[in-house]
Image (cartoon, rainbow, N blue to C red; front, side, top):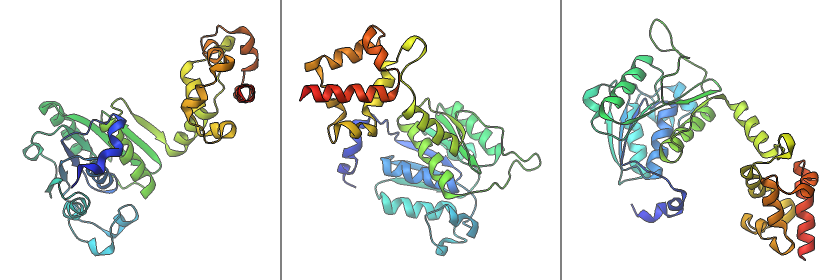
Length: 283
């Protein structure tokens, strides 16, 4: 497999592990494995004793021909079709320490609480990093420890409402945590994630006393909304308004040192209007 496949991700600061074990290859684990392989992980251990059932097909990218086939064997075939140079070890059994070996990450994607605890304990023993990724209906969980929800006191397992969207979302977040954002954790409904994103984009840029955080200003300037004023100009060019003192004023405002401009920029709309005037003056 040519390494040029990964050229466009090289500048993103990813830390692609050489080996990962994915425990549980249902809705979440199947997608986690695919995303890891597509990101360039060269050794994957996939662990699951079960076979594919009809009920799995609403969240797995496979056909009805795979029904009654071992989950790990079907997944291994899929992974090797995508990345022939990836070494895939398919373990058609429950997790145990004999198959764990030495890996950089262990990802628990099973609903079995006993298995979750085993994988977490074993990861600590071998010095591997651990992440638990799962969902309950529309609630997503991504954590370095074992969550409490979803446990059946009798069996440690419960059937939860399942859909492809939470499966793919939490799988993507899990891989993002492993490769780029190690401190990421999630315990939220999907709708709440959307609200937080909208609030971040629309947040006013001033706090008490009209103080503003430079990061908020930078995020605002680099958001897609910049097209409203600057057309196709890049985010870097938004800062390039120094001919009329715009950049200095904005940075002084970010530090709370520019008194006059602070009166104008009390809201997001005020910022846009001011930038628009800076653009026109520059012309």
